[in-house]
Structure formats: structure tokens, C-alpha cells
Image (cartoon, rainbow, N blue to C red):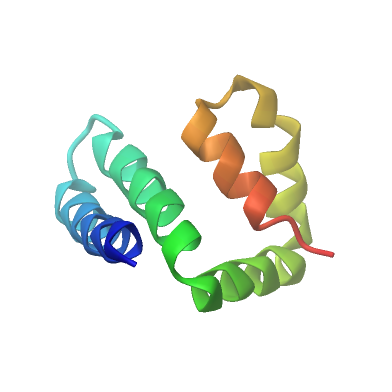
Amino acid sequence: MMKRSVNLIFGILLVIAGLIVMPMPVPLGLIMIVLGLSLMVSAWPALQRKLKALRGRFRKISDKLSRIRHRLPGFARRLLDDTEPD
């Protein structure tokens, strides 16, 4: 329970910080958002269902993400695996 709460808090903080940093020319904000989402998906099943629904709705983007999956770091691959639409 404690690990789940810590993952959720750090995930939310990373997403917020990523949104703040997003306008910078370096894509650091996007990396922070993906890292935060990967932490939150493991702690918050409702978010996992929502991301699955979004990926199902936007199939072209989901397919492009699946094609570049092998080039992504481990945390991003896990996020894509956990949110793969049915």
C-alpha cells in the first residue's frame, strides 16, 4: 500500500512538472510526463483503463506507438504494454 501511494504521488508530481517544462525546446517535459504516467498506471487501475480506452479510440497513434516500442526505454515499453487496447 505504501509503495502504491508513493508511486502515485511521484507520478502526479512528474506529470505536473512535465507540463510546466513542456514549452522548453528540449523534450524533457514529454519524458517526464511519460515517466509519471508509467508510475501512476501501476498504482491507479482506473488510469490504466482510461489510457486503454484512449489508445483504442485513437488507433493510428496507438499503432505508431506500438511500432516504435522497441526503441523506447523500459518504463515506456511497460506503459505501452500495460495500456495495450483489446
